[in-house]
Image (cartoon, rainbow, N blue to C red):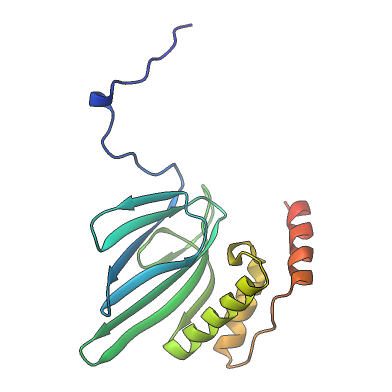
Length: 172
């Protein structure tokens, strides 16, 4: 059996690509114009394109929040937050702008007052010492439905989280 030697540095690719089946999110930051950013989620890949743009990557089954805000000379033209579960190989998915190939959209909210309510909900979860990326997927769907209906979502508690962690360990 022959052992493979690593390629010399001069023959290695200059930029390593993301691992296979990584969900890629294109982020832009032009202050007070276009601000696309990640509120939470464990990144497994990052590529900086220039001072204002980068690409973040998420491994399958990672949950992340993607916030988009844009304005023109007259004020805000876009406010949106999407909480998405990165998909694995062969899983069905929904498409989403700036997310390749797409993901399992758990929450989708538009308009700044609703986006602000979701961000406050995320802050409350953070205050409990719980990573919002580890929150039960059905809770994000619950938040989506309640905010869409104009009703306050139920708070996420440490007890709910403990129950989710136990159930997650036994579900296929």
